[in-house]
Image (cartoon, rainbow, N blue to C red; front, side, top):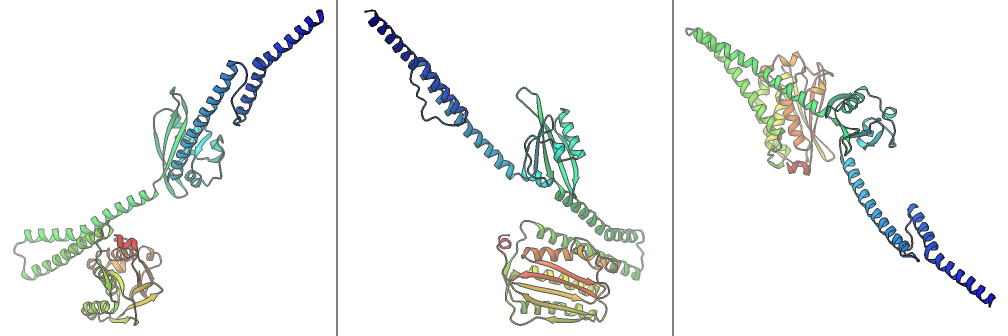
Length: 425
C-alpha cells in the first residue's frame, strides 16, 4: 500500500508538472519565440499560442501589433515615396540640416549645383560644402528671425537663397531648410528689359528734340524766309518719318515676340517670290548704282511660310545691304538647298562688321560701329532683330559672316517642311 501511495503521489506530481508546463511555462517560450521573430522582422507562421488565456491573448496582441506596424510601414513608405517624387520633380536645389549642421536631406539639383557625389545622411555640411554665404544664411535662420533671403554667385550663376528654421511640435528648433533658386535668366531678362527701355528712349530723344527745336524756332520766328522754312520742314519730315519707322518696327517686334504672332502660312514658290522682290528693289538699287546678282538654281522645292513675313525679313536684309554698300557695289541674292533646309543669303561688298561686333548684330538697337551709325537716321536698329524673330517663328535660324572692308553675308536658313511646333503658334 505504501508503494502504491508513493507511486500515486509521484504520478500526480508528474501530471501536475506536465499540466503546469503545458499551461504556464511552454506558452511563454512560444511567446518569447514570437517576440524574437517579430524583432528580426520576420512574420511568424502562426500567432496561436497553446496554454493559458493570458499567453493566448499576448499572441493575438502580438499579431495585431505586427499588422499595425506593417500598415504603418506602408504608410511611411508611401509618404516617403511621395516626398521623393516631389523632391525629384523640383527644379530648385534643397538642403535640410539639423541643429548641428549635419545633412538631413538633399535633392539631386543640390548635388548638381555643387557637383557633389552621393551624400550620406548625418554628414557634416562643412565636409561637403564650404561657402561663407551659405554658412551665414543658415546661422541667420538659426537666429530665429524668421525666413532669411540672400543671393550668391556660383560658377557664373546668380542663385537666390531662402532659409528658414525647422521646429518640432514643442516649438524647439531642430535645424534649417534652405532653398536655392537660379535667377540667372531672370537677371538677364531684367537687364534686357532695362536696355530696351534705355535704347527706345535714346532713339526717340534725337528726333523729338529736333522736332521740338524747329517747332520752337518757327514759333519764335513767324517771318522765317521761304527757303529756310522749306529746309526746316524737310528736316522735320525726315525725323517724323524716322519716328514712324521706329513705332512701326517696335509694333512688329512686339507682335513677333508675343504668344500669338498670327502667321498666315501658305505655299511659297521661291522663283516668283524673288521676281517680286527684285521688281520692288530695282529703283533703290539703281539710285546707288548697285549691281544685283541673283543665284536661284532650278528645281527648288516650294516652302511653307508666311509670304508677307518672309518678304519683310528679306527686305530688311536688302535694306542693310543697300545702305552699307559703296557706290557701284554689288549685292548677291543666293539660294541653296541643304538636305531638308533652304538657305537664303544676302551679301554685299560694303564696309563690313568687326569680329567683336558680329555676334551681337541681331540684338535690338545694336549698331556695330560708327561707319554704320552715320546713316542711323535711315534705320531703327531693329531690322536684324525682326529678321531673327521671323526666321525663328518659321523654325529656322540666322547666320552671319563678315570682314571689315570686304562686306557682309546674312543667311536665313528655313526648313522645307515647317515644324509642328511652329504650326501650333
